[in-house]
Length: 208
Image (cartoon, rainbow, N blue to C red; front, side, top):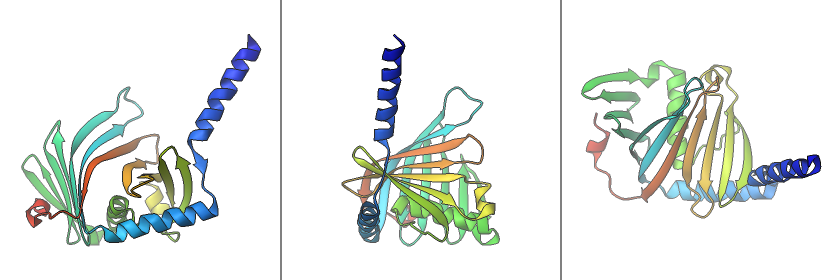
């Protein structure tokens, strides 16, 4: 019986390991090249998203959903529709927030942390963020997907974001999931779906 249990544990462990394998140097080079080629072609992007906020003290993740819009060079709008109306727009060095009619703004220029977080978010959407100066990056293969893990080198930024994980569709070379791990055990996971690339997006989308 013990032998059977040991074999079962070994089988499960092997399968889990097989799900996430490190890329070779050649695979990393090809992956980055594929992603950068696609990222350079993205002038605009719209996508549905579902966000899961995991808090260690809660038994169930907090789920929200909505629509995200991106337009070059750095216009970004997150429009939450369920279970409440809430929007965040990154525009002209500011973060514009509309919480069910209550509007506020934060000047990114007054905070290096906000500026870097803004760069991270825009980069994670376009897939154009392979900066070895800013991050320690590791690359993995999954079934039908590729995974890049980014650990910030900046100590101050690390206080807010422990690690960023970007999951890419292997065929399309675009981001399908963003996971932000905070300094604690909490994290935010955003799943992107129904992406539309380079369709016309009206500027009013980025007005909060």
